[in-house]
Image 1: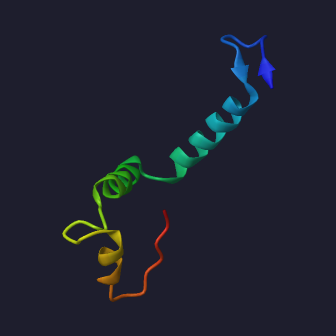
Image 2: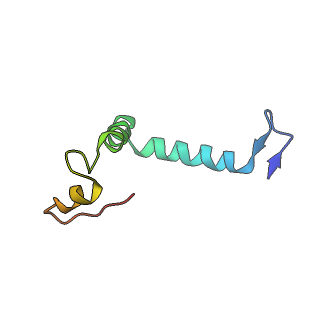
Length: 67
């Protein structure tokens, strides 16, 4: 939905995102979030291997891989 009376005009989802961003920000340390984001950006499971599959094959511990 589009609220033309708002200044500036906003989509309904924007208030939802604002609310949840505020809630998220009050529950988590921003530095911890940055550290996790940096780790996700720089970690490459296939680094030093012929590819992703070989990198995964080297894991010897139980793991949950989400992507």
